[in-house]
Image (tube, rainbow, N blue to C red; front, side, top):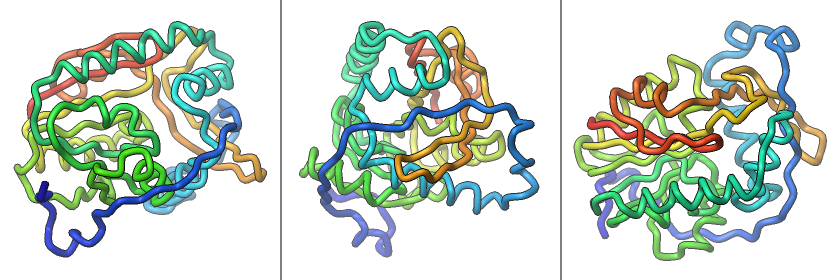
Length: 252
């Protein structure tokens, strides 16, 4: 499959592989008062760079699939059940497989390909993390991979049937999420966004301190959404409304 990417970007699309390690530090929810005003003390690009650095380094420590979700919510002090998480995950995957087949772009694909592998049709997976793409390349050696910025998707306009965005939208500040939606609408006919739900004991949004086993810490902004709010924000309709996962779609 030839990807609709600008010529200057074609050499970035390649196969990658990397071994993984289990174990991930729990996130710690903090009050905004615990941190300085990151809007004023960190430039926008610096904050995003720090977030990218965290997720790139986190790849080798990340627990697989449902256990990662369980660790995350329990680390926040929320009520979470592994069986329920697995049931919701299975339901999300069935819904993705039921979508009409078309050319897709998985933006912020991550290292596992758990959702990428469910998307009907042919396409490409994009992530800013070199480590995530290496690991995904090992799992999905025939899937074209592209390293890129979700705010500057290196794809020709109006060339993609569906853009799928997983667990990225809820990490963005309001101006950033608006920028992401603008960029998705530039390249695609349809968007499907999957993100984090809000089980009991979880705050709607706030800054978290994410720590890695080497002791380094990163401030990460996180929203926990319901399907109706997500659908309203992207101008579409809910596809899945769960405790741990929410999904919505919208025309572009």
